[in-house]
Amino acid sequence: MRSHIGSLAIILCAGVSTRQAIASDKHEQLAPVVEPIDVVPPLGRQLANWESQCFRLRTAGPRPAAIARHLETCQREILANWFPSIENTTWAPACDVFLYSGIDRHSTEGRRAPGSLGQAVVVKDGSRILRRKIVLDISDSRQLDSVVPHEVAHVVIASYLDVPEVPCWLDEGIAMSCEPIHRQAQYLANARALLSREALRSKELTLHRSAPRGARSPRFYTRAYALTAYLIDKHGRSTVLQLAEACHRSGRRAAFKTLLNVPDFAALDEAVKQHFAGS
Image (cartoon, rainbow, N blue to C red; front, side, top):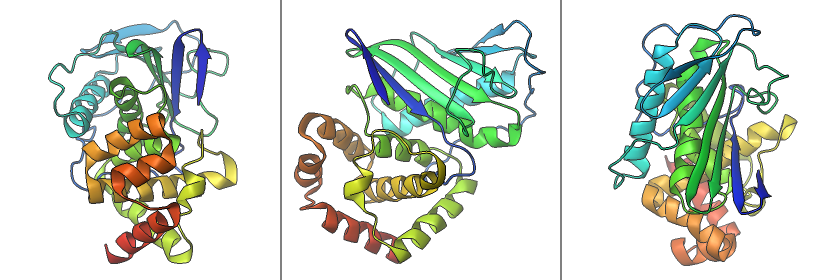
């Protein structure tokens, strides 16, 4: 979802509920959180700062050093996988991370999409980053291995792609591909099961400006994963990033046809279906 304030482009990437299918990259996996996570006490206390190299954490509880280290690890590894030519991995401005045990419905900073455990926002003025922000509900620390890399991936992609908005399906698909391996088997199974029953319907999928909520949400994320995973396997990450930029410059039809030599969406649907049937 995108809104404009003067020359500012606000890219908002909402994380998804762990009940939905969020995919993972089957080649490079991010390191998991291996130490206990401090869960913040009930809301109402004044937020305290905890700074790392690229992140400024705000929490009402003890300093969450494990989360800070996990954020840094995710940021470095996602950058290495998706933007290997980037040498300076330090962020300026740093990414503000708001940690809540249950989202504070009365806090502007603590708001995130209903039903999700995280949300990422990047505010840009042209190619200049004005702000990075992540909101995390850390009520259940067991979910952080998946939620943290998902939200960090949204921020990384928005920060380094020179477009005002990444296509929603691709933004979510890339974020899914950065989650850990224990998610991967289920997401692959979900994609295979869906594609065994019906076509991908990429023409409809690529029209979404934001992720749907409610009953349509699981299918959207499974389809977004299926298409993104196919593109990564078939064409590689650098081409996937070029596709995001080409969709902005030329439109989605022309981008797929020119960059990937896909004649139409029906042919793309069949290629994705065959890919998963044979994988």
